[in-house]
Length: 244
Image (cartoon, rainbow, N blue to C red; front, side, top):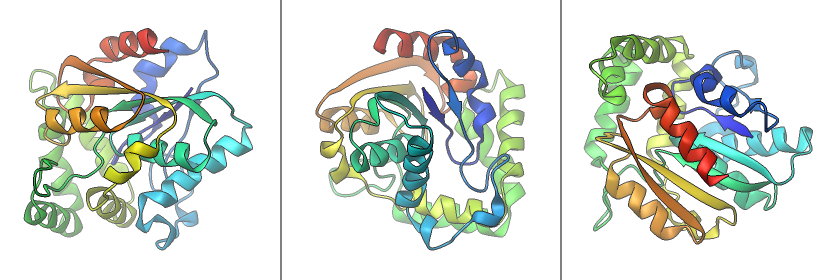
């Protein structure tokens, strides 16, 4: 099982979930470039200007470890990164678990992505001007568990520990991505895990992803916010176990 973290996070965000599968699966954790213990010096702005660059890293990891028929568990933007990797190398992953996925964050006609273009521009401008302030302001809203301030602090600290320049570029690649047309090309059996009251990936987005992936299941978690791997790990574990 390959676990991939979302924007502003690192592999430690999966520790409460991944350990539950260690007896039955070989567990692979990694940090996207610019996060955690990754080699910041290997960053290439041209490569990582789109999510395809991050998907290429997943494929490289898979080939290096000779993965076949593996399970990919991706949180947030990594759900789409995993989907792109599946499209690039069918068979590397037989199953995709997509936690809070979004193929497009910007509203477009009848499509509800959750944000207007102006809102995304403002969000990215704030991030570019004040990385630490953005982290402190956004983490509580993204976590959406006000009764668990320790989780808000954990997410804030994770945001603050990412490389500011790489985080800015990753945010642009994430929030300006549009992978709606790629959903129909996913060959892996897929599970869409959706949270209630998720400001990053609202319910309509999760339902859209499920409707457009040929072989997918949808599960609405009894969890709020965008990070159930932190706020409701036991529920995430149960949902993944029932799927795999």
